[in-house]
Image 1 (cartoon, helix red, strand yellow):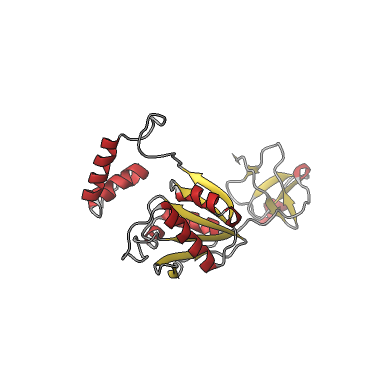
Image 2 (cartoon, rainbow, N blue to C red; image 1 turned 90 degrees about the vertical axis):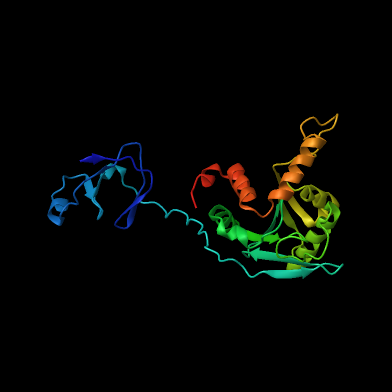
Length: 252
């Protein structure tokens, strides 16, 4: 006989068994009906071959149903038009009562993250209780590129355009290192339900009262390297190795 510690309930007939302090025992070989009938008094055997002391049986209410995570497909890419005529690509996933806008530090490539299992899994979990809104910043990704890269104030106005387009009047902002999240919350407090600021920073360049940033020379070298490697395998490899080191070790 094999001893196994179990914590989940088992069904025995119309009753449900919940684990008490004692250990449940399982028969390695499933008992025959005659063996089950000949089991000593005080023991009950369920169809799976579990032997449970009758002192540990009790009828109780069914456990609460677990929330089902829906497997969602990549949504249709739609566009919102800003007052100055720029078309912003956006996605809406889920239909729950809570709106959540996911803002990355580097916008662009609205459809590409669906190829990343972890991003897809997170999107599915959010879609199980709320409505996830994502968009490509102007001049990047699937949004119009015939314009300059926006400053923070323009990004905040563009977010407002997307929210108006999808009918979101109160949103939870999940800002992944993007300064526009706090700026939007401060500029449009009535449209902001909550702010989750992930990987925050006060500024990029080091100053006398902020010694944690980069020096101007370091920032200039980083921008020059980024411009040189952008769109190449070397840039993709450095990004992957910094975010998910195990993935960088997988040979193509």
